[in-house]
Figure 1 (cartoon, rainbow over the protein chains, first blue to last red):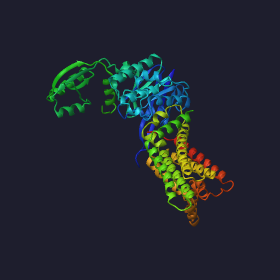
Figure 2 (figure 1 turned 90 degrees about the horizontal axis):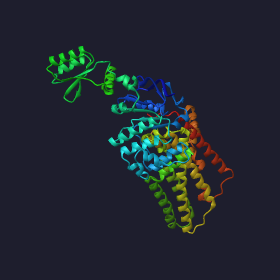
Figure 3 (figure 1 turned 180 degrees about the vertical axis):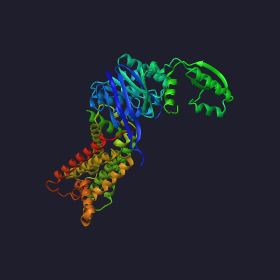
Figure 4 (figure 1 turned 30 degrees about the vertical axis):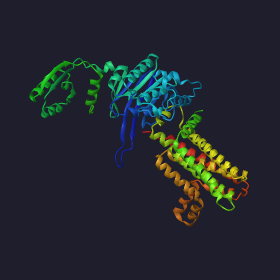
Length: 307
Length: 253
């Protein structure tokens, strides 16, 4: 069963006076199956939050259709089956954790509600009667996750769920998402932290400047096509950098120098030649283990981005 | 249940808000001050207590209605709490009605407290309390409910500061309806048409002004209360419907 079906979603905003409209999202098409953990990866400002806000009915699409759990996304009943955590969640800080969760339980018409198990799930069972005003950023993120689970949702949508969390908190959220997946829940989450996406997701979509640049299973996407090597070098002159740029290579800083990836033997020879010509010194030449980060960087740079 | 949950939350926030307590404190101080002032006058002590007491209820009630009213939605947007609440299975009109209900309860409790001090002052001063005072106090509450509806309406589409300015302007114009009407009648052409539109569109707060009856302990004409009540309820319903319509199309960037 398809839980999320986004078809040709466009979002434009009015531009400044006498300027054309600003395109925030362009022809977004995504399908997410039941039980999948789907990662929505993109740089800051790529349009991830806008997409999620439209899905939650907080913003309107300019055109396109969104179906969630078999119904149009604006249908009132759909939201009763969704758990949503907004980016940088802000809550009523004058409430205690107990009062806060009880308020949200009432919005779901839950007659009998005990907040303690939920708070225990996110490691906040000792803070039941503490006001949210006194919570740290990480604790607020955790209580935000607790409120997203309040209705035992079939679909969870998290916008940057690891944001503001310390390593323990991140581990907790990772375990939680894995647990949700094991229970057959569908999880759609946005992030710009590649390692989180790589660890948790079955499939991903890469969003760049409001458009989908890649979508599919991580393993299928990051296969380097049989050949990829990385050349690390130092001491390159400015003219050398320009020469690399002219060939479409953008050296990235790594430990020990600058690195450029080659996808063929010919590329390797060209890189070595350029480094030699421009007073550089080769540090290493090694096989590249396929990674989502490399794929992401490549996808973004190929489509005119600045990783 | 959802409307009530939102409303109760508004009331709880107000109770935990120090600004509200400050306003309430000053209003109570003013009512007590009316008693002190009346001891310095010769005769008409009752009238002074009534005039100042009702004025305090109206003034501080209006301040609370406007400043809490305009923040009902704008603060949710500024603090970004609205993203989470509206992602739950609650319709936007339920959210707005809940907000309105919460502030209506808050104002009711505040007014009841002011009334209690007012009555206590009467008893303390050995004055007889006329049941005819109930109508003016009830009308002050109705007026406050209209002010909240107007403030809420503005806060659905503009910032808190602008909403407060607009709501204050409406409040002032609404109390000068007779002046507005006489100016309109003297004007011509488009200005006249626009003036009439404004006159009928903005609330006429003089419909709720029963202080004149209270201070002279004069009888209220038959049917007057029903007219004021009908006008107030209709105006609130109209304003809330308009606010709901505007809020329905509001986007949260």
